[in-house]
Length: 130
Image (cartoon, rainbow, N blue to C red; front, side):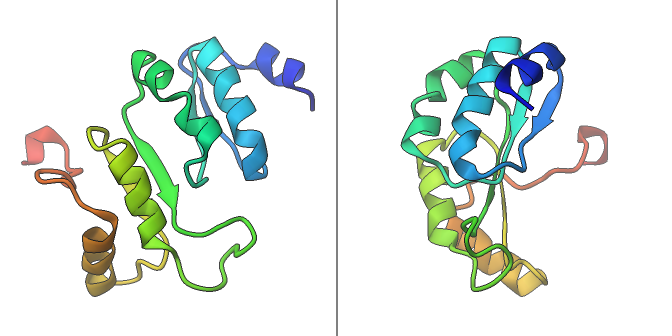
């Protein structure tokens, strides 16, 4: 599948989930921004992705999802919550969903502390249930 094929298939409001290697995410993210589509990946922040910050905000990005492992680790080794913290520090005003090695309440609390939970963040319940 070529970038032109993807560009032809993506419509405004679509959500594109990239399971491609991390080095391909910036190109797919740019394509999504051009199309007015949402983009989801599990990559660490990279200079190429960080460079799209202002444009993504202008396009209405509302959530960032980060997995605390590299592509090479896959599901081995430990998640790097400090890398998730770097993303939190880069986009402090956007909701952040962090995952990796969260298996129970204690590990969820540890991940939240390490990854830098914002004050007032973390309540994902619908407004009517609050």
